[in-house]
Image 1 (tube, rainbow, N blue to C red):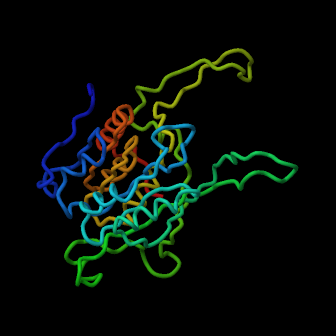
Image 2 (cartoon, rainbow, N blue to C red; image 1 turned 45 degrees about the vertical axis):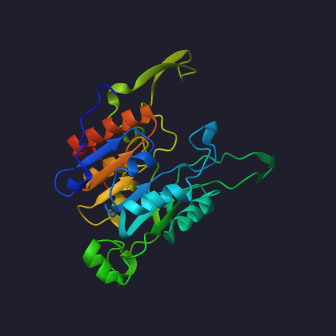
Length: 292
């Protein structure tokens, strides 16, 4: 790839001291095979849902147990994985994680208010489906090191627990409310790639120009949401992995909070966008939205 921002490719053995982030444009299975055991503190990822989103090829499958076993291998004992899913296929994602050896711990709900019903009208108030205003995220954990209690595992590996906050009403629930990403959020770091196109039917009639989002990823998540998830499931300064990086939102969020980041994306265009967005967020942290 040409004209991409530079990024570290230091060996994984030096990750704790020199590697800030590493991005790779390849199949995540190949990428993971280059990483040692017990490297990663948390996996926060938005994998394919298996619903064929808008006829896409990349979303025709749900990652299976063999892939998740490789993810499990590089995670530290007690490390959490939080994986986005669709309502109709969340059980498939959970089952694949379970078969891979993860302990299913919870279902986290991302709640938002902007949604499109996408329903077929039948008769009066009767339609084909409910209006969706949430996405389910599977929360699972790599088993603790054999023979260790949760506290002992935490003391040794820095993993196994969730940053819930204080007790009482401020204790974090498994519902996180956050708006869907704005245009500025989606295109962070890509402003030079925003194009204009002619549109018909403006209020003044005739043609007018409208900006077309530079980030055309189908399921971009808000940076504020990813910062929140990173903070909940990874201790300060830890290593976060996203094997399905897309346009890099998890990476932007990770670097904004001082985490180290490993990201992999197989699509060349999305990888380019991820590199640009992550580099911009790293260099201009004041432009990165706060956590939800």
